[in-house]
Image (cartoon, rainbow, N blue to C red):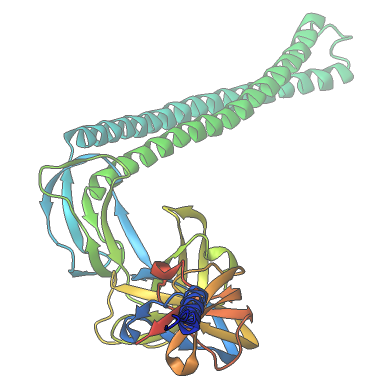
Amino acid sequence: MDIPRERAPDKRRYIYGGVGLVAIIAVVIGVASLKPAAPSIDRSSVVIDSVRRGDMVIDVRGPGSLVPEQIRWVSAITAGRVDRIDVRPGATVTDTTTLLELSNPDVQLEALSAQQQLNAAEAALVTLRISLSTQKLAQEGVVATTTSDYNDAMRNATAFDELEKKGFLAKGLLAPMDVSKAKDKAVELKARMAIETQRLDVMSQSIAQQIELQKSQVDKLRDIAQFQQSRIASMQVRAGAAGQVTELSLEPGQYVLPGTNLAKVAQPGRLKAVLHIPETQAKDIQIGQLASIDTRNGIIPGHVIRIDPGAVNGTVEVDVGLDGALPKGARPDLSVDGTIELDRLKNVLYVGRPAYGEPESTVGLFKVTNGGKEAQRVNVKLGRASVNMVEIVQGLNAGDKIITSDMSGSDTQSRVRLQ
């Protein structure tokens, strides 16, 4: 009788299962340990610049325009209505060219009134001179008469003295009263002559003073009349300087007040550039710093000649004198771009200024690695910056290449692939 044997257990199945389980665990662990795939970026869509060592120029830039160094504003001296306009902007004028004509009847009436007052004062001066001269002549006549009477009295008194000495009084040939009367008359006329002479001196002095006062009044009225005439003449508005009319926006019939700017005349000569620099960048600008002005038809060297002490709309006005010849087409009010050199850093690392990151700060930049196939984020400490360049203080070496364009879309990534 056959005895059934027990089948031996199949160990291979357990072995295969264990090996499979280990393989699955290994795959899971391997996959879990893999880094996430880096996003890809088209190389042509980014800007890559190389870190360089050398001298770096610190500069600032701002827009502006060319303006004449000498500008004359023509303003209204008196109020008036515009009757006629003789020139328009762009016309070349001399200092005597009439730009426009104003009219104001009130000014003409005031001029006539001032002239009338002047004429009356001049007539009063003539009358005063005649009157005072007549009075002086009359007083001179009084002095002459008094002097003559005094001389007669003195001769009589002298005659009586001589007769008295010869004894006529003692002999009774002369009356004592006649002798005393002759002497008293001489004393009286002497005193009167002194008084009349003094009165003539006082009159002569007062005549000069009265005439001087009246002349002063005439001179004041003459100045007023001349001023009124100048107001009438000013209504024929003249350029006042040779040059080119750049502004004149009035039309016939408009009424202007005293002090209103009527026109602007650009006098011939050199032009200067007036730049508008952001106030945050203007703090280091100094008089005399070198500059270059781009007219879009050539670059003109220059230097800073004036810095406005105040800021307007976030910008500071900086005047740049032009040291070179003007290119063709350069004219007043031409729009330009200006660059001012602030400083030069010797033997430093620098690179094109990134689209993000402030000077004197630490920022994450993408450094090109792996033969240009990838870009790895590195922390870079920036130094001083100019318009286009920034100093590298720490984090990069000469020859390194970084992405300087905007990478805000990859802020969460530590590396990217370049395709």
